[in-house]
Image 1 (cartoon, rainbow, N blue to C red):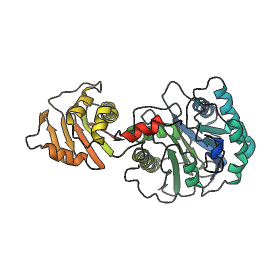
Image 2: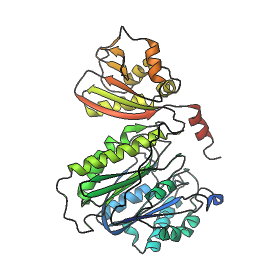
Image 3: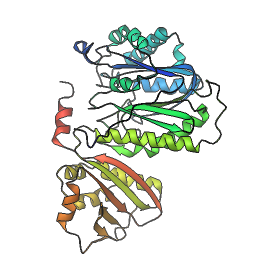
Image 4: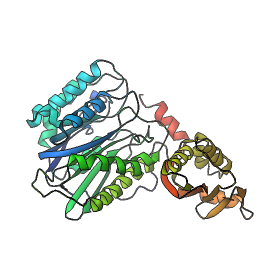
Amino acid sequence: MAVNAPHLSPTLPVPGFRAGTASCGVKSPELKGKRQDVSLIVADVPCHAAGVFTQNRFRAACVKLGEATLHANAHNIRAIIANSGNANAGTGKLEKQWSEDMISSAAAAVGLDTDKILSASTGVIGTPFPIDRIRSGMDEAVKALNENHWETAADAIRTTDTFAKWSSKKAGDYTITGIAKGSGMIHPNMATMLGFIVTDAPLSAEQLQPMLQRVADRSFNCISVDGDSSTNDTLYLLSSGIGLGHPPMDDTSEFEQALTELCIELAQLIVRDGEGVSKFVTIEVTGAASKADARTVGRSIAVSPLVKTAFAGSDANWGRILSAIGNAGIEIDTDKISLKADNVIILESGNLHPEYRDGDGMAVFAEDEFSLHVDLGLGNESATVWTGDLTHEYITINAEYRT
């Protein structure tokens, strides 16, 4: 049940890129032909690339292979192959072989070397990977390659997502188009998701990598649905601009701003489509001694089960929010903290506001979209985190995930 899911504008084609999909029955043979579950992105020219990956220590083989490929060949990436329905994680020694086989299959289908291909998988963890079914559908994905198939590609990487997620932006004369998936097992470093972004801006790998990390920290690393980080989180950014012969871009500020806006849009779509989420909550933390402290406090509130269930019950239980702030693990001064829900002042400089009435707070929490504002009163740094509530439906979805 998505929260105020916006109408998404059509994606923009990006010079040098095509996308195609196939229906392979990855999760179950019975689904073959019923839904697309393999996405293939192919660049017509060598691309510069960057990636940001999960910080979960039990990382899937595709994550490890992707990091290694970027380390060795970030100046000459030509394709991304991704599947939904099976994470190919937690399966032991065969996991790496299956990931390599998927890459090899894509390489053979598009006529490229394997060291020019990145991969990603998402779905059930700990289940044998159906590489034969994926291999059998690779030609279907190649035949479907088209510059306008981004929305179909976004649909094919969905798992429990209720809708496909995409966005396009212009940065001067250049185009950025991105697709993402994510609904559950969502938490920063990285937020649990897959994201693939392409552009024809002429940026080198040396420019893209630090930029993508900065942008991820302002977008995908600022969302949380349930506090669990996945084994497979992957965000790739590919640029065809240099391969297309455009002169290198020296001033990247306009491009980075557009990329940030695109990634924030995709990140917020993930929260709006969170498993069982019925509320979309923006947590703004100001007055922190450092940006890291502000983000830590925001995340502590966002992941607290007691806070999230209060959201679900439209209960303005501000004591739970204060407890989450106190549990964040940073130095605070309780006499300086202020708290608002939208425009309703609850706490001011450590004291309950004399005009606060519980009914006013309840009215805000009853909205399907609202903001919490926390002022720590200790400095000038701030951060914003986006989250949702925790409902009975979340338990149902995840209790029945494999059945």
